[in-house]
Image (tube, rainbow, N blue to C red; front, side, top):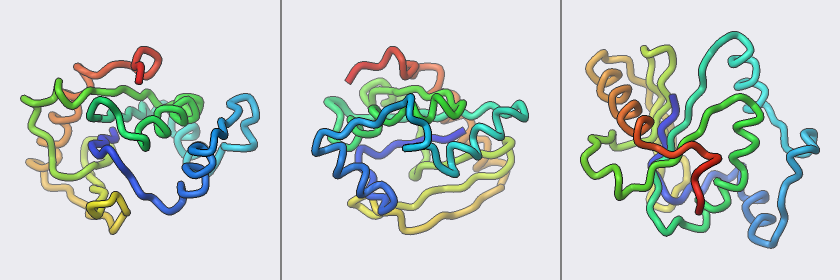
Length: 155
């Protein structure tokens, strides 16, 4: 499970692609060699082993420029085997969300992503306390059940 709750990410590895997208570039999903990377392969390998990989994004509307970019790239995640859904933030007011984005692995280990105010990744924090894992898993499931599948989410 991967929960994303920010409207802007400033991840350095995406800077060039984001700038190109802003200038009108669109990736060609049929030219996999131009966009497939190690992360996509990791997901594809996990899915091939029977692992379910889900990503839920809580977003403000109207969406930010970065979220429009992210939405345009999501078919890459889908091609790798992820299932992605979007939840408008206005529909999440009664969902208790953790303070940071996270990955939850095997319902046991959390990896929180720590970001600066402008969206730069500043680090990660691992957690495995059962109460924290349960809180995050419950938050994710509450978001997931309300969220819109990528194919149906219009920006």
